Amino acid sequence: MGWFGVVSLYDWRKPHAGVPVYEQRVVMFRAASQDEAMAKAEIEAATYANDNAVAWTGYLCAYRCDAGEISDGFEAFSLLRKVACGVEEFEHRFSSGSFAGED
Image (cartoon, rainbow, N blue to C red; front, side):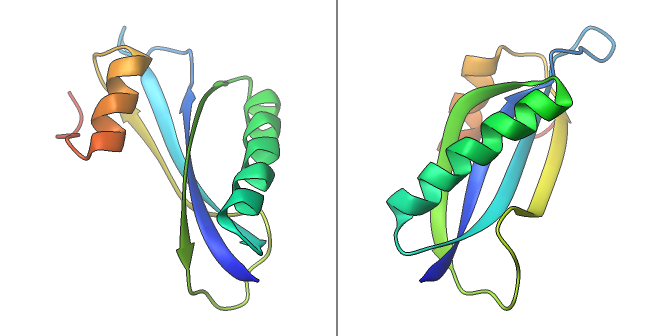
């Protein structure tokens, strides 16, 4: 068993000054494999989206990490970004590492 950080991406569907707002989250899961971590992350992402009335884009990216004592679902990182692009372009820019910052 190991710890995996899984990045997920959400569309808040509430533009700020006419500009779309997206959230990137990293949530930690204890799992025997990356596939197991991704399965747990899918459930958590759908629940988070429903609880917060936001749209989960379906984007997930997992990485195995060494961590101390934490519990499943612990949010390690969250960032809201205000950018003037559609969700597909944002997801591409974010996942490709070419995101230059907020507009």
